Image 1 (spheres, one colour):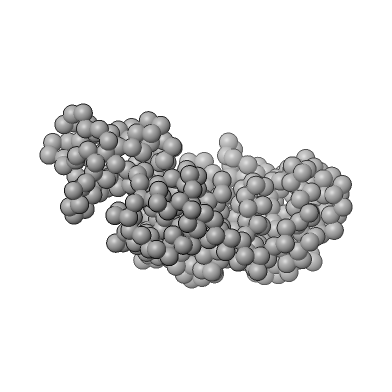
Image 2 (cartoon, rainbow, N blue to C red):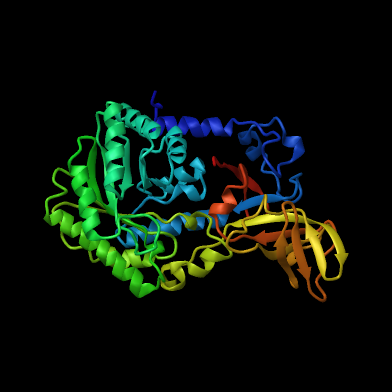
Amino acid sequence: MALDNGPVHGREALAELAGERVDHRFKGLPPDAYGLTLAELAGQRRNLFTDGFATPVLALSAERLEHNLKLMETYAARHGLAFAPHGKTSMAPQLFHRQIEHGAWGITLAVPHQVWVARAFGIGRIFLANELVDAAALRRLAAELDADPEFRFVCYVDSVRGVELMDAALTAAGAARPVDVVVELGAGAGARTGARTEADCAAVADAVAGTRTLRLAGVAGYEGEVPDADPERVHAWLRRLVALAADFDKAGRFEGLEEIVLSAGGSAWFDAVADVFAEVPGLSRPVLKLLRSGAYVSHDDGHYREVTPFNRVPAEGALEPAFRLWTQVVSRPSAEQAFANAGKRDAAYDLDLPFAQVVRPADGGPERPAAGIAVSGLSDQHAWLRTGPGAELEVGDWVGLGLSHPCTSFDKWQLIPVAEADGTVVDYIRTFF
């Protein structure tokens, strides 16, 4: 049975989230808030630092979150790009809807579970950046498409075998609407997914044309997997992608479409995507130039701060890291070492260790920079802090940590307070991993 999805259903589902009650599932929330709904707790506008929140607690900056949403909205519009940010970053339907309110065409996702979450919250346009060959998932997808004529779904195909599996499953399901697919061009030898050559792409497109259950909607790929990526190599691969779309169009492969989908764009090279997609030649029908960058929503203090395209195009603006993980010093065994109560269960560590940024003294003194303090390692529930000469740090102090890699920060927290600069918590973001 397909869900009753759409804008109205999405609003109802978000309202149900606001009615969820605080309990033991959610880390860091005030114990005296148990039993309150999230809407009631948000209405109290508690202060993150003085109103009962317990460490470790991950918070999003309200101001920086809004800044990032607005910046990518204006960037995409300035460059004539449609935008389907990758939802696997946050898996937060509240943020999906805020992204759509800020101009997003839809949401990109990676696996079927994520699609069902998005549909449960009324997301009407989904780009699945993967080939979908699971028969059970395809049956459900067919039911979703048939039940909701407004639902737009696009996914990758990168092999003849994949096309055959999709066709068999959709045929067995009695699918009435064809599934829109885009041929994925691989980024090069040894890269991740995607057909490796233009000839391979043509063979996949031929296989799609031989089915009733699939419709070729365009071409796509992920430039972040270009081997030894640099501006020259990334631009060259993106031009191959554009040329593939033009060749397919010249061959009449897109007859019957209202628009051709051309999609790329992770969080490290979207400036190159904007450059090359601006060069798309006139085709037989309009082109939906679909950017899929997702890490921007929270940005970070590590990997993406280093690789963001805004470093190359500073005149376009700058994203701001919106995460801060608050942890408390629980041991100070020596002048060179301290331990805080947040570890691998709480902080992303797959790309970089967290970064000590600020200290809030236990005695209520003013917040100060975490001078001479660095995170040297993580245990499951402890951060190992290296403290240099003169570092001011006492048991009981709160330490604010910056994080690297949003995708593995969101997934450790089911509920994330959104705090204004003075610590006032104005919202709570629910995640579904």
